[in-house]
Length: 164
Image (cartoon, rainbow, N blue to C red; front, side, top):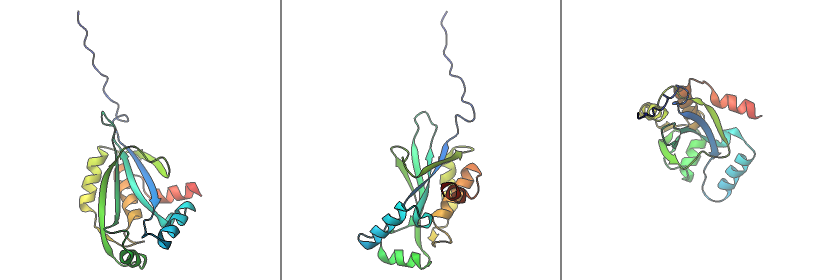
């Protein structure tokens, strides 16, 4: 009698994608600006970091994607000055594939309620790309996308208070 191997169905928790928040130093043109941004990042100054959402899928082969919102030309000094003066600058939502999760400044937030990559792509279709520092920037994008994926509100405030 031949036996048939049937894989056990995945539980709802096993099939949900993992959602993370990652931080990187703000990019600046080479020279003093770049040194200042690197120093601020090293000192863990939260306002001078770039935030993004990282999703690790639970597909048969796990994949890692990063979703972020930034100026179209983040290293242009005129764009940087305009952004720092809280003037509106053209922004862009980027989606990239990573070989693996970042090892530093990457915090697990929770599990998505459904296919996180598809949900994030739908979210991006509605995201307004006019960027204004402190009003509509990477922090707002990260917070709202995390809320859309996991239901958690004010994630950056929680991370900031837990790290100080």
